[in-house]
Image (cartoon, rainbow, N blue to C red):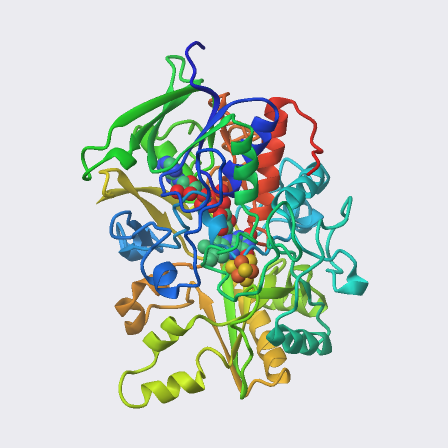
Amino acid sequence: MTNVDADVVIVGSGPGGATFAEVVTAAGWTCIVLDKGRNHLIDALPPHAPKQHFANDELRFMERHFLGPDPLLEPRSYRRSADTDGDRLFAGDVNNLPSTVGGGGVHADGKLPRFREDDFHLRSLLGAVDGAEVDDWPITYADLEPYYAEVERAIGVAGEADPARGGNPFASWRSGPYPMPPGADMFGATLSTAAAERRGLHPYRAPTGANSVPYDGRPACNNCGFCGFYGCPIHAKGDPIAMLSRALHTGRCDLRPECVVTEVLIDGTGRRATGVRYLDTSQATGAHDAPIVEVHARFVVLAAGAFETPRLLLRSNPAGGLANSSGLIGRHLTFHFQTLTVGAFPHSMLGHRGRAVTHLHDDHIVGDDHQAAAARAAGLPWLRGGIVEHGAAAGPVLEAKTLPPGPLHNEAMRRSDLRDKLWVFTMQGEDLPQHGNQVDLDPRLRDVWGLAAGRVTYQPHRHEIAASAYVAPILEHVLRDAGAEWAFTTTSPPVGDLTELDLLNPLGVAPASKHWMGTCRMGSDAATSVVGPEQRFHDVENLLCADSSVFVTSAGYGPTLTLAALSARAAHLLTDTPRERHY
Ligand SMILES: Cc1cc2nc3c(=O)[nH]c(=O)nc-3n(C[C@H](O)[C@H](O)[C@H](O)COP(=O)(O)OP(=O)(O)OC[C@H]3O[C@@H](n4cnc5c(N)ncnc54)[C@H](O)[C@@H]3O)c2cc1C
Ligand code: SF4
């Protein structure tokens, strides 16, 4: 190919795209990184200073879409199934991740556990489940382990490997220690972990992408408490500013914010990508006058996230989608099925200090005889839950919106029964892949740029519901033992028929885990998967995917460290560079 603008063009600057950019630029390649969001993270021009746009500002981050996308401008639609809901149940904010330079990494609170060895071969290990498409990954934990180690150092993950010192006794083997010790424990977690241990569970210090000590030129976290959903004002979170910063400092990375990629360009053979077309919205004065720009590259890498990547491919070829000979683009969408158990304490839990979550436990992933019996009782071959996050409730603005106005409002805010005195367990339950759960294009809805909106069709498998029903009483017991006066459980998405309340607030009907996976499944067989083990699309040899779209199963762990490790692996394989780099 002649006249290329760069070796690689990467769509999306979140953890997946940023990791890819870092590895290819370190290998001496040039790249252009396009992101449709604004840049509040790092100066794209030398000397690439971190921006100072973030503050502990609940209104800006939680209410005003500071990191976008505004659901009125970029709506998504949602339905549980075509049978129950027709074309859509509602349109708006469906499990949105930020659209900004840095993607969801910017305001994730960054618990970054690895998957375990079992997670890569569930089908062989545990067997099939009716109605689900559980499969083995085409790679193993051992294939990914060096890249896990590499991205833990690249991001800067604080954690403890030794179970005798608060590490996870169920974690798979690792080739080295974490680059940093864990940060301070949250007060509430000291109570909930002690009670969990009394119940025979094994809580551990959460591996977290926030500096516990100065690292990589960035300061230690000061436990400001506005972590999940907020950009870090001091850039103690490394994901993905650390990777973008290193890529930019090579001088070989051209970061372009506010560029909405509309299409992947393909040559006449249909088997080679030549680049992408985008709208440069930074130059637009309205919705319809953004200049259209094309960039050409030797390789095109999609890292737009597991919602936007399939949406882009499907609109790149309206006649069935680009690189879609399997018909599987957008299918096998998984989230995590969240079990939220809330305990109300008679005293402050000091949840406003700390990194949102400092402890996890894995027991409901690993299971035991009781969990196996619960599976049999539910008519299922096995049950797997997910990590349980020991954390606090939301901020004061949300609490104020929840409490009724009037003379008692101030007194209720001072008591803060609905925030300061709550402690919450969130289980990120493994969500089994199903053929019918998918992202496709809404037949009528358009975004502000005139592009077909993405539509989510999703309902949980009965496995997730049974796992949640089994674990919830255990979590409620632990919270009561920790001192809660009462505890209750809810789930996301809610289970059962919609209530009138649900219909008043349909947003609550859609899953809210912020974890998206599985819409361009990885596999060795082009008939049953979309990308191969090296994350190249089966149908288009120089098109790659570097986000969690490639996941075969969701596991019960946050996806981000695994998607970053996969991205690093794919970039090293592409550039044929050694996998161990040092920082
Ligand atoms: C509050 C919160 C807490 C979280 N906590 C955790 C956690 O503790 N652990 C964990 O593992 N995960 C967590 N997550 C999830 C985590 O943020 C995501 O898994 C991660 O960001 C996904 O990375 P990605 O690079 O695949 O995609 P994204 O981060 O979604 O980045 C994709 C980027 O692509 C851009 N883009 C999309 N389409 C286009 C287009 N057409 N043209 C140009 N650009 C485009 C977007 O603007 C975006 O910036 C959390 C998320 C949130 C919101
Ligand atoms: S808790 Fe720490 S890592 Fe999180 S936003 Fe505050 S200072 Fe940054």
